Length: 339
Figure 1 (cartoon, rainbow, N blue to C red):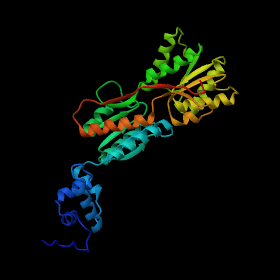
Figure 2 (cartoon, one colour; figure 1 turned 120 degrees about the vertical axis):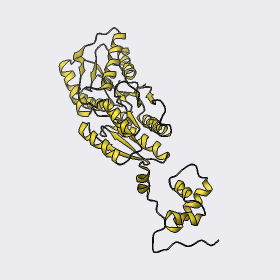
Figure 3 (cartoon, one colour; figure 1 turned 90 degrees about the vertical axis):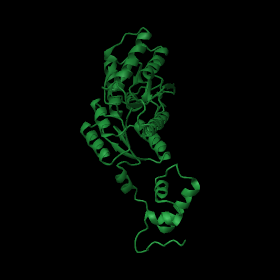
Figure 4 (cartoon, rainbow, N blue to C red; figure 1 turned 120 degrees about the horizontal axis):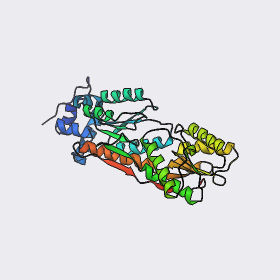
């Protein structure tokens, strides 16, 4: 039976593609959505027909009809920190392999901006939201997003106890490893630099304190220098520590970027890191291998963390009624020249 050619005065439609490929409209729709339910040979035939007719799939219109999308929102608190950039790269790679697009937003540790970004992601019908919450985020946010009917996965910074999807690391254990390493070198006064508040800070400080206790060293609050978790914070924290306690020979840092700032301060003071002062960071960012000197760090493999987090989100989308999902990276101590 001869097939009627589409009217070239109008754009080709999905029905035109179905006729040209000799398949149903629903089959064409599934192929254009990259569904694994269609055999490869059929999918290729449909795509060839669409290309021949110049058909362009309006994915946004289809998403609005379904009130969903193939977009995953990833909301990051601080993209100036290479740790979060590496996490994001891992997330994007995993989601792209599964046919999802990453819609990224940067909140800059601003609660109001975070609220606006999340509302925008809801309006764009994101299939899921992956959020590293800003400091001060209320656990009530979990209930709010749940009421939207959008899966939420919390990244890095836990929002208290409860049943929710989460991907992070064993912060207390990681900081205990770093502190015990420095104590094992014979240092009895070990500083703690950077960080100010939040669950991650509390966990890492707890690991520091427990390492001291295990080695019979009294905790000294004067050796803890709270500061913003960035280069400037690390720089100021190191300067303050050595101004108040110049004989301090070693320090652990809240994260690697704080350690980079602390290394800069040591350089200005003419103190050789690794020889005159031992320092260990936390996160395992790639830049740590190329600092001066190369930075010893607690490695939680940020890229792998991102891949694992994306895997949890994909699993949640496939099994929306399953119990809460968790991935907690096991830290390892990566020793280099700094300490």
